Structures are given as C-alpha cells and as structure tokens.
Image (tube, rainbow, N blue to C red; front, side, top):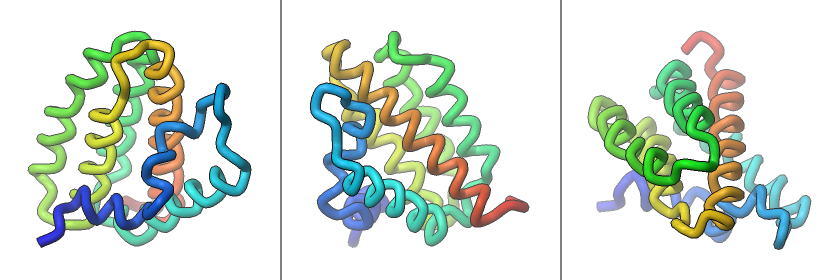
Length: 140
C-alpha cells in the first residue's frame, strides 16, 4: 500500500528533489522549473487540500516562518507537532499534505549555509500551499 508521503513524491515526480532548492541563489533553478513546481503545488492543493483547514496550514507556516533560518533544531522539532496534526486527519488527502511538509523539514541539511536557503525554500513552498489552499477552498 502506498503511504501519503510516497503519494506526495509521485505527485511531484522528478521535481520533488528540487523543492528545497527554489531559493538556492548559488545554483538557481530555471524559471521553467520554478513554474513547474508552483503549478504542481497549485494542483496538489486543488486535489488534496480540501480536507486540511487553512488554519492548520497557516499554523504550521507561521511556526516555520517565526523560526527563520537560524534554528534548525527547533525547526526539526516541529515534526512531532505536524505528526499530531497528521494523526488527527481522517482523510488520506490531508495526510498527503502534512506528510509532505514533515518530510521537507526532515530533509533540511544541518550545514547552516545550505539550511538557510532550504528553510527559505520551505517557507516559499508553505506560502504557496496556504495561498492555493485558500484560493481553491475559500470557506475552509
């Protein structure tokens, strides 16, 4: 049986490995790659974002944003909080979204120079997820 994370990875296909590279100024992604990733986030939230509330997404996003790029340990400690949100979800689609966020946090490197742009990329992804979820489901 496919897990929610495996489903998220197949949703992004070959672009999954570039999600945390969006804000990498040393090796920038092409505009086409960025457009493709943003379009996939839009599609993900349209297809899978119905059953997670915008409040839950904003809560995760605000915690990530508040930490900034300085405290990798505290960022990684958000994973249990996200696991709690995931555990409360009875819908498979909502679990796909939360498992994706948790996995991206897990992938953030301990090297502070790399972590800085990865965290900024995560913030950008979260901002897009919150925006597209609200766009597709304004009353949720």
